[in-house]
Length: 410
Image 1 (tube, rainbow, N blue to C red):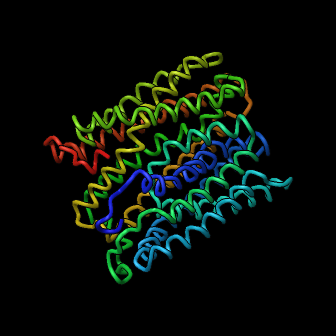
Image 2 (image 1 turned 60 degrees about the horizontal axis):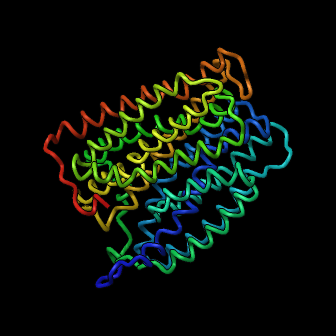
């Protein structure tokens, strides 16, 4: 922000409000969309997986370039950032509407339609989110999880568009950042983060952990409706408890950070997630109450994934002396990893489930067993690998207790 000015609650709201619709669109894209196309349009899981894989791979590959664009725009002027952000917000509204309100088409045309609107929506979403990393995400996903089930997809889309306009208007009134330089970043800045060993180690752990989290996010609605055979009215309760517990757990995790440090606290969250999902693997029809507790506890574990990897990344950027110069490149590659996690989760898990005999709506015991394995046990294996990597690559090379700074705690 401008030098000499004090950050107030009004400033925080002006900056953070856009995080609400950005998080709002994240849940429809990554949780609701697979189930929506499989059940509403009858798209086969293998086709759906291929579409999601292609779109998210493209999305992932463009993120580093969008990070480079963000650095360039900030070097020009804040007005340039806001202008491109406004255009991207408009494109995002149109893209999300087209994605969820597809017309009656042939199977091949429907796949092309879904792929095209996914590319449009994800690119616009990435451009805005890279430029605007916000704590508002923890509130937005709760609202997005309730509206589609309670009021329908058209209401969700209308609320998203309205929130996006309000968020962008608030963003224009946020404190202005100080320009780091009077010229655009060097052409080599796109690859600069990869020269830092600390960044490469952190990214490897983040990807393993992210894939472990992305698989259940892709399959959760299939698990609820087919494995648990829960009534549709319970779906908002499960999703809301998950995200609310994630948000409410933040103060507890911040206290743990003050005592254990960022990396050890993240490790504790990983182990909690494994314990919870091992329990989920044994649930079946009629176990809605037990799954509600699973959602609450796994939401608590999610709190570490939401807050701590980004704080560790900020620490890496600061330690390398790259603050104010290459944040866009770092966050571009970071978002690349996030999207790649989602691409692999959807592109591999859905076709694999179809090959193993599962189809949406099935009551076949073998197909439901495969669904439980993919939803709960496979993520446990990946999360344990991430925990081992966190210990070996980050904690073990620096065994001294990390004392977090004030910036890291917030």
